View 1: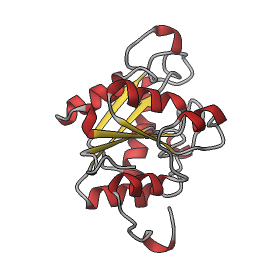
View 2: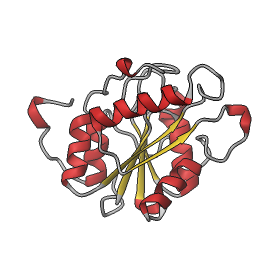
View 3: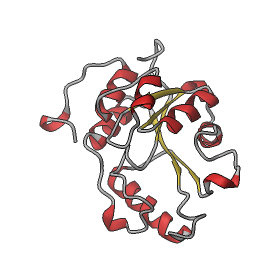
Amino acid sequence: MSRGRPPAAVLFDRDGTLVENVPYNGDPRRVVPMAGARSALALLRRRGVRTGVITNQSGVARGLITAAQMRRVNERVERLLGPFDVWAVCPHGPEDGCGCRKPAPGLVLAAARELGLSPGDCAVIGDIGSDMEAAAAAGALGVLVPTPVTLPEEVRRAAHRAPHLLGAVRGLLGTAEPVLEGGPR
């Protein structure tokens, strides 16, 4: 899966990829890491690969959560799984026509720019087609980790996919390092 060398940074979708998908979550107590998230992030950090989060949060635009609630949820993700080198968040709704909302490339481009990297030096790991489309539009490598919400056609279209988060990271690093502490976490 890797392009001959590990990426300089891996950018993760938040909901359904790093943490369990709770639609329009404004409650930090409902943040639960996905299986393998801690081990995958630890492996990247041990290898010196920078990490970031790119996330659509249309609940803010729709009035379902406040920007403050979203920040508290992101802070909880950071406490449980961080530190992350960059966060890029789109608070817009689908009808807003912004350039940052995935599948547009804006979040990937902004995160790469903040890290001082070319998007081609980044990989994106996500659970739905819009994550993969954003990666491709930005020139980054996308890796799909399907979940129950991933559509079959999104799985078929994905150039790169992995059965779980730790497998995606191992594929990007070109490693078969043992799973830490008895299994994916």
